[in-house]
Length: 117
Length: 117
Length: 117
Image (cartoon, rainbow over all chains, first blue to last red; front, side, top):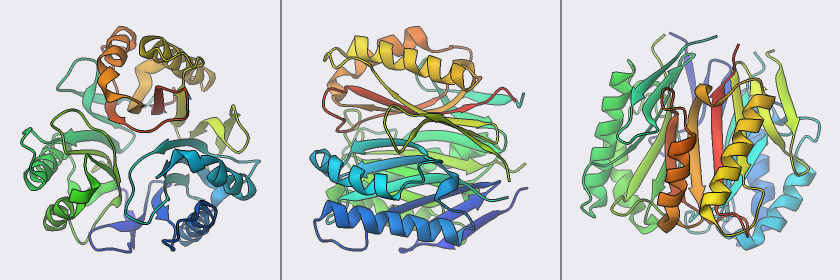
């Protein structure tokens, strides 16, 4: 049986990162509840960088990202930050849809990355 | 070519579970259309247990879960049931967002688990 | 380190298809902005066929699909096209939920397929 490595989450009953068979599964939001899409996106992507690093990988190994936005009208603000952040030589597959998020969250990103194994 | 194992779905044109290369993909809802989040979550998670068992694995091998709720205001009810159910030594990565579901459904859970290979 | 193959996307900062370790990750929408669910679904699925082919695989190797619809009331129209299109001997796991999409899009499909390795 291939081992599963789990990293503690910010809340009980879930892991922030799960690594298995060369893949890393994670989800991030921002730290702030300020309703500023630019800032929340920067924080969410900084958290993604941190979590990928914790799992021994980085954004150049991202495979799939699904971005949920609380307000699709503000997608251009998110996208501007994304374009500054993404590894343009190694961009992931990305989908972005509007969904109701937790009170205070403007953005939530689910990601699958390859490990460096 | 690695083989793919597919389990019949509740509707034509889809599989309830697909297993490939050590990963198991599945989706569950509740059985009832009663608008009771606690009950629907219990049923959905019981269905998840059943489907993981059918694929030869169990909740301790869950990697990633995405929970769609028809009403985010009722997330605390879902979460209480989740915390009773989840394997606290082996929790998956979990995201939870609000989305419009099929009439009568309050919850839908997409999951990726590791097989016991 | 297992190699990652990326195919250019329709917009900067993302790949249309990413292939890694026997799995193919992709996302599709329709080409038209005509608000016709039948036509948009046909186009999205034709795009999915094309992208899977580009990655050296096909719909018989689909594992997981998540369909986002801008209007769940029109799910029956999507489903009729799906049933014509899907490989009934090899259907993927499928989830379908309502979400806010980009202006003009009625459907967006995220998919994970197995390669033919």
